[in-house]
Length: 380
Image 1 (cartoon, one colour):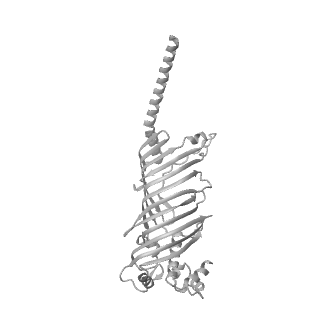
Image 2 (cartoon, helix red, strand yellow):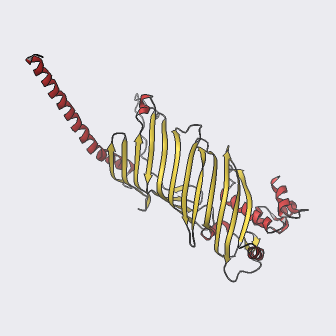
Image 3 (cartoon, one colour):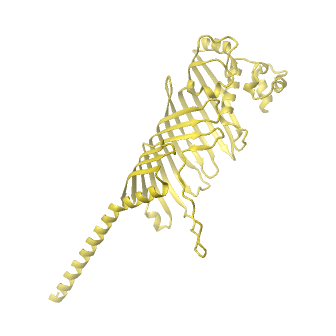
């Protein structure tokens, strides 16, 4: 190699190294300040009620730390320890937008339902849409995105229900671990599999929930199993004590249920065990627990190791505004318990049946047990 050629090669190497250094420094500065730019844009778009502690960007990965959303009263309704997203760049070669995983750590959400059944919390602040200028092209719809896995670690939810019960009920879920796989947006006509575990703290015990199955997000079809252990029923009195003066001071529920939903119709057979029931002193023989005479309940508990095992089937049209899933579940459990304790259909209060007195009498005519009455009632 001649001296001139060596000089040219040396110059080329110096230029190449300089370009790499400049690009590297530019990329480093971009990554360093991009989080501040994105953070400022998000807070400006979502308003003063929304804040992020910081955003860390890396190749194929972004993590937001310290996410908070407050309502108009200043209460934190959403709080997230960290949210990380990892992209699958191999999908870009196939002209697909693929997110390999989304991980949410230590999230908290306060959900509130008003007396009309509307979600009033949380509500994201939404900026008004700008009207497109004449001659300006409208924005194209977002291309399809596939998320391989979404994982929630150590989540918490406070659910305040002001609609279903007479008195608002606050249900707390803690230690939520949730994984769902294969989500397409817009939602595709395919199933996504999931698994869930959570704790339900109560006054006397902490219940445990485990569930797994699959759900078609496009139309909400689902096929799942759920298992509940040691759920403290005293936390849910307003759901089952609407017309009963008896005060339940202690009680646990174990529940196994298989849920299938297709075309907005639910079919969910299950087994339940009510156990360790105790009632406030002074409750009379005429008092009723879930529509069943308290004297019968107490007598059965004494001879059955303080347990009432029952089987039931929840069925209905979720698209029917008159169908209330919580009320229907309580009604079915009440009917199953009445059958277990040997009541005839005529002896079951109309409040349990959800029918008028004449309707209950007509259904029960000639029926020796509630089982026979139920067959007439539900056409089984």
